[in-house]
Length: 383
Ligand code: 9MR
Image 1 (cartoon, protein in one colour):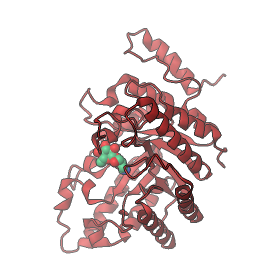
Image 2 (tube, protein in one colour):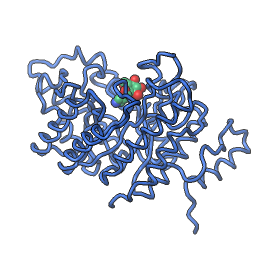
Image 3 (tube, helix red, strand yellow):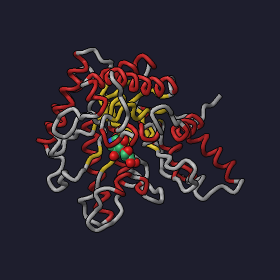
Image 4 (cartoon, helix red, strand yellow):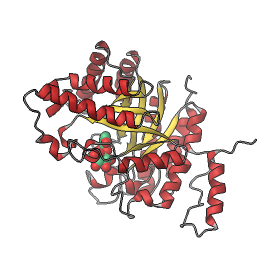
């Protein structure tokens, strides 16, 4: 029997659906040639994207946009929840869990043969816990209650999705830009052990899942101490026997600190390599978990902007893919209008930003080409 590629089956399905007054663009070709995921697969890698459901009952949510869904199906082999598994969504209060939005993404992925990553079991940062958390009564034995609550949370999520989420961002962003462990009510009662507990409970709940520490330290100016802090934390975790498999390198590149005129210069690239060498030297894998390119400081002209974004992406990805330990690349949004950057650090000219591979009409941009070229240029990953 001839095996159809996923794209071929989709074309067939889309043809069938077109006869039933399909929404505009449903059978549209978004790109020429193989999909990003097909290119990645050839190298033993994965390509995917974050997906947000927003208000699950609102039809205005991009998640219900047929063209967007089609684009995800065509390009991605893996999805990750943008917000749906965070405590402030999944934990309406101390006793309950709400998995409805998260399950919508899980179902969509399963129906379309995509894998799932899990983000995140513990965003160890006070800003990103639900409001009730700050006033939670930890009682007379606060350490015991903190451990109980964290264990229950991690176990419930990992067990629920066991065998369906192959990789978790167990802990997200716990090292601040000064290189210190962020403090929350959990660390107040448990100290740094809060991190170890999250990893151990996750491992127990799904021994086969890949467990990552995920953070935004980057090679750009201003992140040197955060890099150092992350490295030290990973060393301590390994020393204490915490089951951490790898580092999630978020890769929100081109930040406000980045100077496009001096570029990803040799000194910066060398510094970044030293960091990655030290991380991989601990026998940890690398994953690009939240890739996008900030164009806040680039000129208004779209052609110039898109070109600079694509060039920076290519240099960065070539470096990252030169590590055979880098197998996954997930973008933080497939189309510009869905990017988190639209509402943050606005451009001085007020123009919408262009940080993702597709524009607001789902047309591929030079950034999509840069990702494809970087994957094509990468050596096949060891099995
Ligand atoms: O893209 C996410 C945005 O919709 C949320 O409002 C925000 C706060 O939950 O989180 C954004 O995603 C972040 C991710 O979870 C962790 N790394 C940084 C991402 C961008 O802020």
